[in-house]
Length: 236
Image (tube, rainbow, N blue to C red; front, side, top):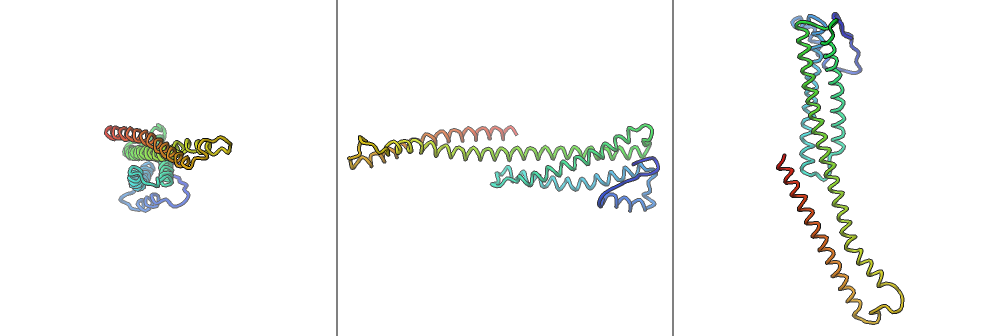
């Protein structure tokens, strides 16, 4: 609650910026001339501490980007989730403080004037810069999340492709072995000692042919994906 003569605050837990402001107000050289000056000093101190937190967040984002774009076998999904949650909370608090300052400056009845108003405008600009910084970090975090989803999707497609290769190779072999395993009279080659080896040779040729066809299609798809990645990298 802010009026022209006093500020009433309620907080839960320890607030370092408030403690530092309380000590600074005891200095006669830094004695404020109004409650608005106290509010501006408090917001500037909070903004300074938020900048320290955002610097740490920037380093964490840099590390996550290096891990993701170097295709780490273990994508940092949990670390990214915690970072995005922290940034969202920071944005919520920063937005609340910025709204308080803006409403105070727009108040024509109780609003400050003169030097206190200039101090509050500087505090509002600091909050605006922090809000833009948080938005930028969230955009980077969203890009990292999109890259992780792309990597996971690519790995899933690779696993599906491998299963498809195995199914393509062994499906005709299973069909032929099941057909030749029918226990009925009149099966051709059942009394020929060379029939077994002939069937094995045919199955081997069929398996090799299916493998060559699937490998050729896979090589073509990989080539298209690599060309598309190179074009995307050049655009960036």
